Figure: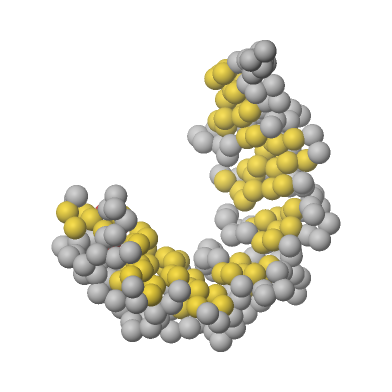
Amino acid sequence: MSDWTRTRVAPERTHHIQDNLPLYSVRFTEVLSFHAPGLAAVRDETGAFHIDLTGRATYAHRFQRTFGFYEGRAAVESPEGAFHVRVDGSALTEARYSWCGNFQEGRCTVRERQGRYFHFDEESRPVYRERYGYAGDFREGFAVVREDSGLHLHIDRDGRPLNGHRFEDLDVFHKGFARARDLRGWHHVDRAGEPLYATRFVAVEPFYNGQSRVIRGDGSLAVINERGDVVLELHQAQPLRSTSTG
């Protein structure tokens, strides 16, 4: 019996396989991965739609693009705009947007036709009055938004700022910490928006089991711990080499 959690997209990206065997005989122009409750977004000459594990369409309607289901809803695009559909293909709301994200933690980010972002709930109701230059997905209870000042902050599920800090750039939380960039460079911050260490870098990765890969301004790479201590040098800075052929 097919199990959607064990399926994957075939290398040709025209169908799905499980245990290296095709799930069905039909072939599509493009397929995306299966998501709960066992449906996948596909496209063929008739348009874009969703299929079940047998390769059969789950509804009759066709869209310009379809994406995976998250929390029982999938983003789709039509000539009228972007919106979300339920498993049966019915529209979640009559509103149409210039772009829709995916539902995460009961919230979804969308962009209005005027270019402004906000989040709405499971019934497509805005959860706050503000509109932002950008709004990302929720993770660990908070999302990143960009104010008109150009600075970024974390907000909670009701749109309230997590703390008083603003950053040049910002990421969602991962295991309690977030990547943030101030005027000095990238670093990691805690839930209070406070830096974990004083050093700044050209780039930092999220912490993985307590350690993060970072890039310094001179091009060298290292691994640091959550105190900012270097635990491993990965790549030393190289002297500049002339590209002139004289």
